[in-house]
Image 1 (cartoon, rainbow, N blue to C red):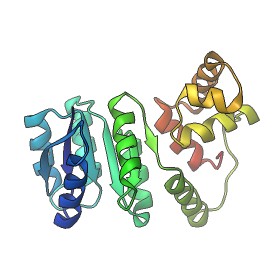
Image 2 (image 1 turned 30 degrees about the vertical axis):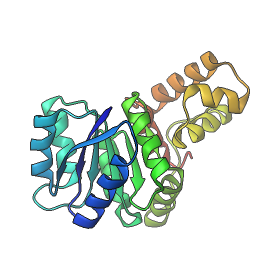
Image 3 (image 1 turned 180 degrees about the horizontal axis):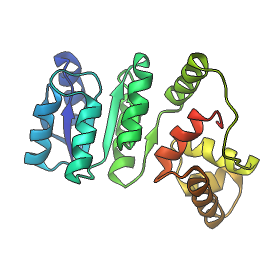
Image 4 (image 1 turned 90 degrees about the vertical axis):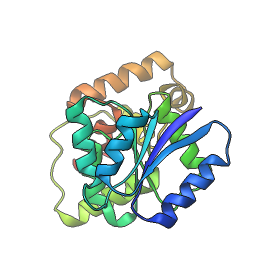
Length: 210
């Protein structure tokens, strides 16, 4: 059973997500919160396996919740729920430690897949939203030369990482050994000075690499 804390200020959205999750076996919403401060209390009380976090909320925003969790040393994986209007805030959340993000209108099966991925120690970056953020940032500032040089093969791997694929899935897609892909991902993280795959993707988007 995957224990989930849901932090969302809109009651209809909150109730809808909770109902849909609890219709599927293996998922339990142990607490809901309508703002960030209440959400932190619920996290401390229930010690969930995964946190679903809205960005724009009263009292404490999603980014403030993430910053507080980091300060407390709480490594519970956080899946950010957002709309297309929240590009900059999504970027801040990922940079602050969120392990994934999804649109609120995503299909239930993808939400469950994202929760499963985070629960297993992975990340989940919705490809459509990744592309929207990329386009948004290109429109808001002039393109600048990347200060990191990735090979064409590394760029292909990084695009698949951004789509939420595991090393094994990338290896199958590119017809390579899993160990080769693992080494390429490690090289990408080192070149981008990224602490994990999620941060690598966001840095690559920033620099126009993908």
